[in-house]
Picture 1 (cartoon, rainbow, N blue to C red):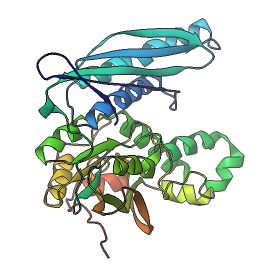
Picture 2 (tube, one colour):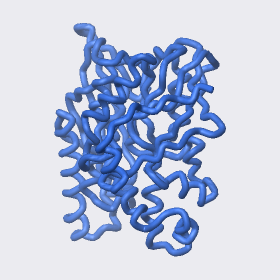
Picture 3 (cartoon, rainbow, N blue to C red):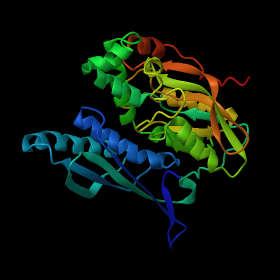
Picture 4 (cartoon, rainbow, N blue to C red):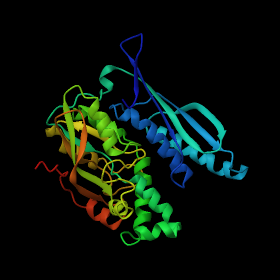
Length: 337
């Protein structure tokens, strides 16, 4: 499971708790703080939990930073983490700070729940639909942005993407990672979700496999559609698929929720996700959710079909996103042929 569930001795309550931390991956310390907090909270949201009683922050300050750098960067990082926690309806009450060769940021999230406040990730049934609530491709976008200043690597991708498109994709990845999955967690209850997880370091296929393995019923997950930040699939291919983005194993950070929903509820879930906006960073086509596959009888594994449909998700603020947000269209259905 994404979080540990510890039954308490009194009142039929459970303590649900999670922890996570990682190295910085974006240049903006404030945004990195928000991303770290969103990533920690996402483990609660993956179980349909919308409230968090308490957060702790874990911070490692690099010994390679001079005093001026520390004084500039660390308060911004801490403020970003605190602001995201407040957006999630909780607060940071403590934590631990150490000096280390590398910057590391993360935290702990805890909540005491009644049984009806969380959804155990083991109830998928044949006929369910798989929904993803954020586009893939954050790792590719972050790396491509770093390559703008590395001619040898930029030359490998410059024929498939412009510098402006890379900058837009990087901004989209940053805003996406900083967006809380809290709305999706609430909608899991409204639309009777049977199971869920968040997509992070193991990539879409890795987390889909982990979720499939936990199911009580003998089911398999079949993924037909891949919503990906625009141009990131082309970059991945141009690099010889070292990212394995289309293969589903490219790591994500603070990715979306992968949710198993009854077929009759999936489109309504996606529509409500879209209507509630695009989260942190402003409006645009990036907000919403996508139907990406189906649950069928099987051996508790997940797979991506040989030629999945790539859904190019335009970065918010781009011309394509503004055009898309001015029109409404139903969520794409999986190709069942």
